Length: 276
Image 1: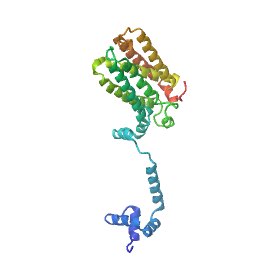
Image 2: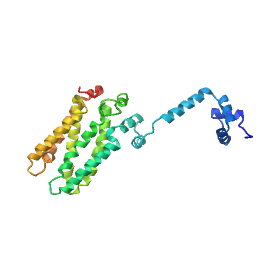
Image 3: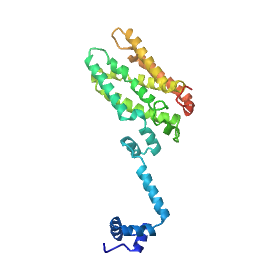
Image 4: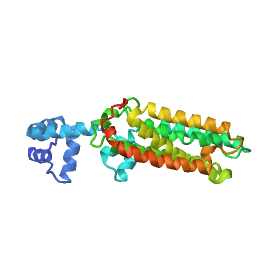
């Protein structure tokens, strides 16, 4: 190689002051010329060079946001909030895929039993999906990102509510899409909505006392027992929780549980996964 970049230009190159087109020539040349690289290392500012390597290492080591996190960032959500939401277990593909499979099977069962007054299996399962999704979203026993959430600038009740809203929106959205696959039942196919809100808010309220595992288990078990008792006394008609009276009770339970959840909100700031 018969041509080399002058030392003066290399100094300007190191300071970031070399202008095109000389910059382009120097950039291409330094890449292939070991001698000029050695000179560049001698004339460059070692402090600036170390800072540059540190920035490069930080950029290479920084985790790349996934689709959901990138979408939240584009919507203007703060970076730490987007990361905590994206790490929510119930918003991952595996859980959402399992929810879709459960809904598909319950919709298929509703089509098989078209002679019944309402899609009973679908109405029984749909309210439990948001409850299970919220239960997966916090607490050291279930959330693999619990330590990150604890040291975040918004842990406790606020983080719980943000994740809960995100999970409920996703779960209710999937439930709603499944409801569209049951057009023959009309408004009866929407009878899962109020029970879903009642179960979720009740589970959250009890978790302040019982923890994130036991509370939803108790609520889910109580829902199952209620359905069994309602089925035993239904005589082939619509189950009591899905009648007008049952819907009113579900709305009242949801409102009461939401009010109690607000009263016990401080417990979640000290929540450590065990019963309080």
